[in-house]
Amino acid sequence: MNKPLRIGLVDDKKVNRTSITDKLRQFDNLDLCFVAINGNDCLEQLKLMPLHKMPQVIFMDLEMPGMNGIQTISIARSLYPDIYFIVLTIFDDNEKIFDAIRAGAHGYLLKDESAAGLRDAIVNIAEHGGAPMSAAIARKAFQILSRVEVKPDDTKTETGVFDELLTDREKEILQQTIKGHDAKRVAEIMNSNVLTVRKHIANIYRKLHVSSKAQVIAMAHKNNWPQ
View 1 (cartoon, one colour):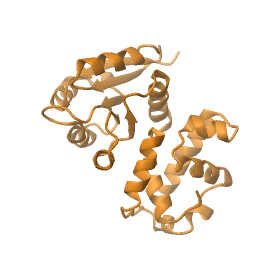
View 2: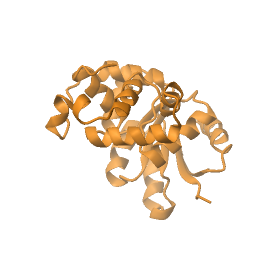
View 3: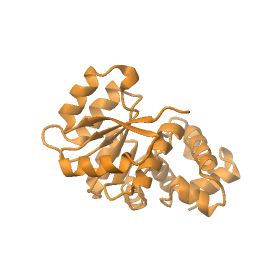
View 4: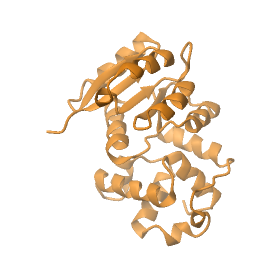
């Protein structure tokens, strides 16, 4: 039996911590092993934790007293590169989305996400290298990043990548992804299974030299790929 995925939660409001904790504890494959009340508390606790006990995924609130979520992610990403950070917040305004992506957040969800949605996001990112993002957030990210110049590591991705590097199946999945659909919805649309779709998405990220859905969306818009 696989060990439960270790999850962390950083939020200054007790009511939010309780709500999210209740959602996560519905699943035996998730272990909420880390709870902090703000960014400073998060970094202090991580500093004292043995590596083998550190959370694999941390849900991060944005607006907190002291060190906010964006500052915390930026610092923690450099100190703990193996931890995935998913923003979990009530804010869906453009500036906060862009700042979170720029700080290195791996995903961005709203706090009204269902328990199953949180679980799927965790599994997606921890086991398949995905980039969970609410559909509404993905659409906003598209609008924001369409104005940002993207410079992929491989110059071949600037032109012709859609036809040259991706298989037909990957192209279809990419088109659904940049519409804001998550892996589960893409699987439904394409009459496939979620695991297969996630493997395709991981291959797409590798070929395009990107690490998030937001970067894919920006690249697609910049290069006028079919949507």
